[in-house]
Amino acid sequence: MNLYDCHLHSSLSFDSQEPMENYVKAAKAKGDKYFITTEHMDLESNFAGREDIVADFELQQKMVKDLSAKYDMEVLFGIEVGWREDIHSRNLEIVQKYPFDMVIMSVHESMEYDVAFPDFSRGRTVDDCYDEYLSLILQALQNFDDFDTLGHFDYLLRYIGHTDMANHREKLTEILSLLIAKDKCLEINTKMLHTPQAVERLEYVLQLYTSLGGNKVTIGSDAHQLKYWQSSFPLATELLKKHGIDAVYVFKGRKGHKIFI
Ligand SMILES: [Zn+2]
Ligand SMILES: [Zn+2]
Image 1 (tube, protein in one colour):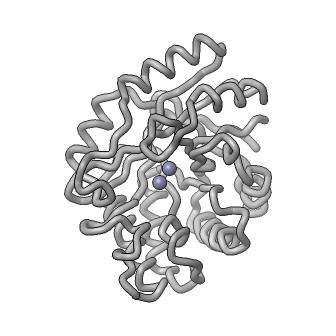
Image 2 (cartoon, rainbow, N blue to C red):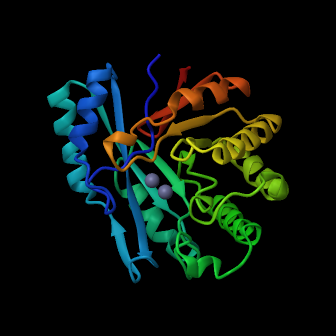
C-alpha cells in the first residue's frame, strides 16, 4: 500500500519555495491517489514581530481544485496550526471558516518566544526547556479540540539538542493519555529520523503510546522541499510495525481513514 505524506509545506507557506505542483507530479509518478499539503498558520507570531504568518487559503483551495483536475488525483486541503493561548479564538475561527481536510496542531511558540530561537532557551538545560515545551503542548491539548493530529512532539529538540525521553515520562504520559482520550492521532514526524537520537525518541514515545492503548498515527515528513518529501518513510514504517502499529491515518473532510502498512 502506498504511504501518503501528511505533513508538507509548499510555496504557500512562508518558509518554502517549492511549488505545490512539483510534489503533486512526484506523487502522481509514484502512483499515489491522494495528496495533501499542510500550510503554516502562526497568528501574531513572535517570529514575525507579532504579524500573522498565514497561507493564502483561498489560493490554496483554488490550487487544490485545479491540481486535482489536472493530475486526476485527490489533492486535499490541509493546514498546520501553531497553537498559543492568546490566539486560541482566532485559530478556531479560521479552522472553522475553511473546509480543511486535515488539521495538524503544533506548538512553535511560547507566549514570548519562537522556541526555535536561543531567547527561548536562554542558557537553560535541554531538559528544562523541553519540559516547558511539553507543558505548552499539554496546554494546547487541554484547550484546543479542532484538530486531527498532534504535530512533531520533539520539535524543540531539532534546535537545542537531544535528551532522554525517560526524563519526561510523566508529562509525555499526560500528553499521550489526553490524545488517546480525545481520539486524536499522534504524528510520526520523519524530518529528523536520519539521526539515531530522533529514532531513540520516537521509539520511546511509541512504546509509551502503545502501552497506554494508543494506536492512531499519521505520518509526515514536514518537508519544505521536494527532496525531503516522504523522507525516512521506510524506517518509520519499520518502527511502527515493531511497536505493533499496522496502520496510519489519512484525513479527508476531517474524517480519518485507515491505511494498512
Ligand atoms: Zn511545525
Ligand atoms: Zn510543518
